[in-house]
Amino acid sequence: MNLSDQIIRSEEKLLRKLEDYFTENWGDTKLWSHDLSHHRRVWNFAKELLLHTDNQDVIKNEGFCDKLIIACYLHDIGMSVDSGSRHGSQSRRLCEQFLIKNDLNKSNYQNVLMAIENHDIKDYKNSTDNDPLLLFLSAADDLDALSYTGILRYADIYFKRGVKPENLGTMVLENTGKRFQNFETSFHKYPSLIEKHRKRYFVLTEFFNKYNQQFNNTDF
Image 1 (cartoon, helix red, strand yellow):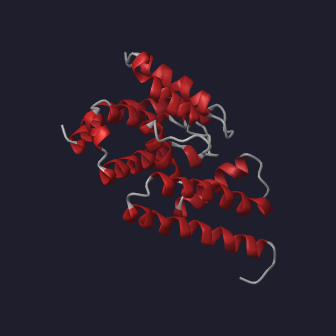
Image 2: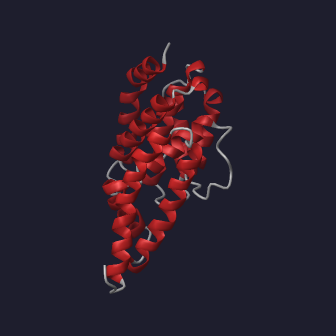
């Protein structure tokens, strides 16, 4: 089965279950930056990465797309409980409940649970080269932090976490710089992919550089 067919099969099997489960557990949480729309975009970015790189190891593992769609849709569900930067443990717990609810053997999804728990570690000190599931999840998640949507997402979550307006731009630029550098490192074999998303990265960095200049009353 080719990769496109695997993706379609995974969506047919799991997409509705995942969206229903997410909606049920998200409830009335007021956090636009990490709601269902974020998880839909992350899955779309993950599909783009898969299809662009045409990863042969992934194609050989016909269960990979099932695992990746679960990880993409549930990686931030724990923010309904904990909106802090280390919310992965709560997301893992809720993913475990999803597996139980759908009669999926947890022992077969340990890499999904580990990827969800660790996706929010954004210092990138530990390589994801040996963990393709975490690699694709983390990269897809990072791509949704770019461009115009990323601008609003950062403002939403950082203000939720108590970041002061005068610190917002500097913190965003530092965080997104690490994210994009990691994306470049992980997908350096695909320059057209890098350049496509570099344009989205520049949209966000240009905005927050000008934000910093205006906030500090300098010419811009």
